[in-house]
Length: 404
Ligand code: MLT
Image 1: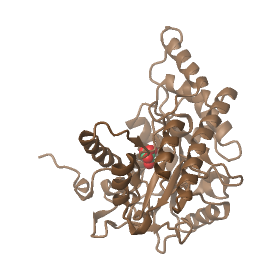
Image 2: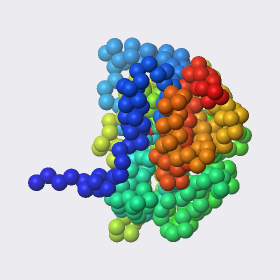
Image 3: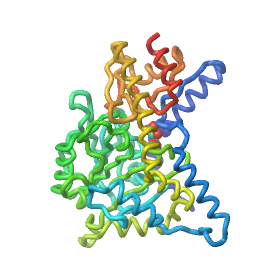
Image 4: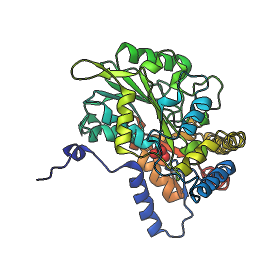
């Protein structure tokens, strides 16, 4: 008889964003004329950079001709793209092209990476991108949630206003630690000393650091690190996830990469050190056929001179939106974090309101959709997240409504 993966039964609610979409859908059905502005899920709104569009068209034309047609690509990704990433995104880091694995998204990579680890003690920040938590429940690394909403077996590291949204290091040994900087959902960043301390902690405790840097392109402040590999020892302990999604408007195109350095190892049951890069390579070549040639050429164009300028303009557009939101909320006397080096603004709910109460109020009274902070974990209660991924027109209208 077929058996399910019983770990799935330990999952609490549905995934956060479909739940928000369901509530917004209900509201829209009851109020079909309400001019809703969505600032919930962080999904880009602006069209692809022209250099990318041109490269995509050219690649389509190549696919239309026998001599340049491409079938299956290399599993880890086309060399031209892996090299472009190594040369540009890791120019100042000890990362080679053959340590870079192209994929169709950081969400799937940060989930799929668990395939290459055995049962693990896992530390996550709170609030946290829900994918890290839910996939560990699915993998059996966590048991059903208690009354406080926290899953058993996970080590939660609260990132609060009191600690400047810098999660403390685990007070017990763990095997895997997830960090995300610039942070989703709080929009805050970590400085050099903090990230070096994390690398040192992971090395000393033989933990693997799963570092999600999907939002690095939005960093504006000089000297805020963009990659974990800027730090001594990181190639011995860290895997990094990076994405074209938010950087270059690829949420609908799908492209990302994961770095697994050659020197990074973990123990087998018989006590040997095994290279995680080889396991990830094996995992990907068995379960994944890579992203398309067409999309790969689009990604490569992100690193052309024109592409770099156009991506910088996109980032400026979204970060100017974040600034408008921050200023409007601050002028209303709200307490606001993030939105300086990340496209998310983390807003304290006023007057003891809960996250879902503020969500409902913004939706009902202002027709604005946010993401309730409690959806990201217990420590997110009492906050909502606003995404700066929007048109300027929508953000200006949202600001008018917030001011009113
Ligand atoms: C978010 O809103 O947190 C992101 O869009 C989710 C994601 O990138 O999967």
